[in-house]
Length: 280
Image 1: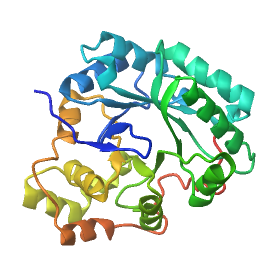
Image 2: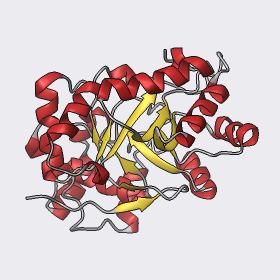
Image 3: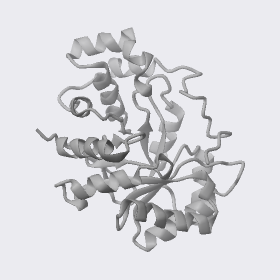
Image 4: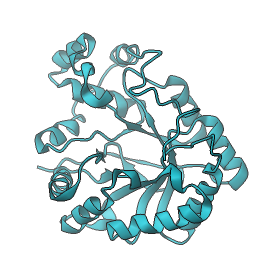
């Protein structure tokens, strides 16, 4: 049975479902089958990246699926090694060729790589690709407010989305407030904190018991009520269905605060601080 996932509008008018499917490590025919099963269940937002080396897998799932292309929101991302303008232009084209798609609904700069200082020209390449019809909406990943302010100042265009690490152990309260004030939607990567010890947390288990839900569902509902778009990854149809079965209950303010209160100063999963971390 397919589940209808609510959508929210970006600052450029494109709508995105509030939950999508992360596809990191989903490759080959098994990956195609996993992505297809997610589409059958109700997923319409599919998140990929050039560096995941699975754009072809995503594209094949799109072709095999009975879901009309216009109902899907397919995402990919520009890697750090191709942020020079001409390389970025070619890489966007290559991303489309790999997937055999005519356009991406959302294309993001994967990391700012501030030491290299090429993210503004990469952004200009995304702007130009959007004007050519190769991308419907453009955004970034792991950018700090100062990075996004510079993009808008130098190009006149602000991102529609910033995909950042966000989960109960790293709740990004200040970042979330800034995004809301600047009308840039947040996508949460690793929304379940890679499902390690967080799935044994006593506070989350208590809330799960109270609502007759799983811990994963409690966390994903928290993301939804924060206004963030979450992209949990799962190859299992059962888990995929579980992850989007969160629209039949509500967390109250006290419960939301309990979850947000789990945040830690060292809550990042791999200590990837965008101010210094570089990805190529």
